[in-house]
Image (cartoon, rainbow, N blue to C red; front, side, top):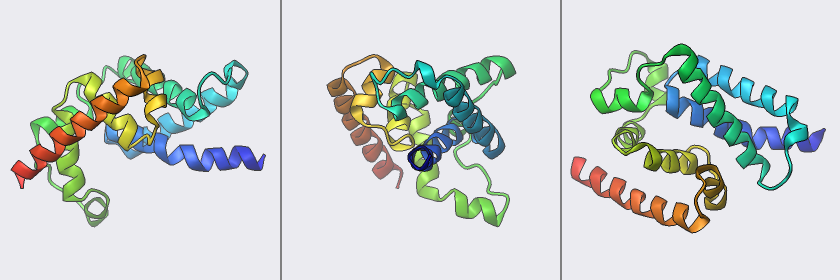
Length: 164
């Protein structure tokens, strides 16, 4: 049981951050994170070990997010909102501590990427997945994920330098 708790302690913040980056809503992120672990526990027998537990969990998380968007006919993700309104007002001290300007600018630049590129960046930054795990999730090679992420990172850094 301790090993399971350790795995949960390591993966849960990453999955929550992934959902938060995608939805921009704490309650929704918590609900989706809970649902991810519920589905994982319910279907643990289907985990065959061909990938890491983390990769398997993120594939569940990604599927639940797609289902959430379909079910709620969600019009705009956080990324699209940030692309349209880059200077969103901060309403409270709590939000001020939660979202600093660098993170806001980073998310703004990520939001302008095409879907496949954005997915790689979010899985690497917020999901903290290895390039091998990202490759499995996007059905590409580890090297493709690594090279693509590196190029995207350079593009973001250049864009952020211009913005400053």
